[in-house]
Amino acid sequence: MNDGEIGIELSESKSDIEPKFQDDKLSIKVKITGEADVAEVNTKLNLMSSNVFTELEKKTNNEIKDVVLKVISSAQKEFRSDIFGFGEIVHQKNSKEWAKLKESWGESFPDVPVDVHVDIKIQRTGTISDPFQNELIKE
Image 1: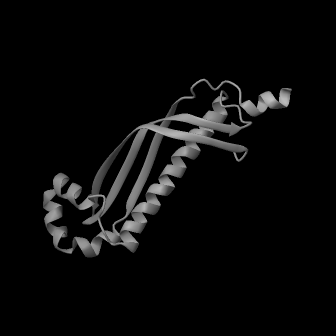
Image 2: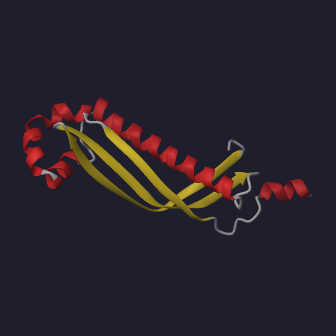
Image 3: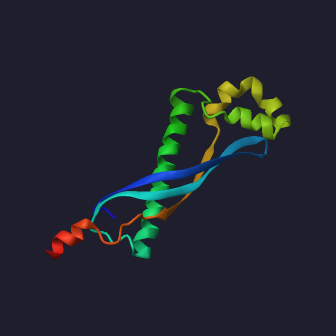
């Protein structure tokens, strides 16, 4: 899928953050869902093909996941700052466990494992029916 460029525009997104405790160890699960549209096409790929479209969705989800993981890692390792409010979410959803963590949250936050799952569905391709580059080739 390295044949040109395709621009994807998120039209709607939602995140759900769920703290998990196993053997008194905290981990965070982040689930991102939403919808996107094909905004720009500069490729010879046929976006009407379900195989191409499925691969485009998969690549979009992987790229979003990579970006989110990099930002979380940066917040944890470089800045050592809970800019996402994970601690507050732990407090809201499991106050008993939070009571054990809150005094050392600044020290333990950088080591909390965070799992990210992304499920963005590409809904519309607008009026795209045949890539412009294919029209040029025909002439």
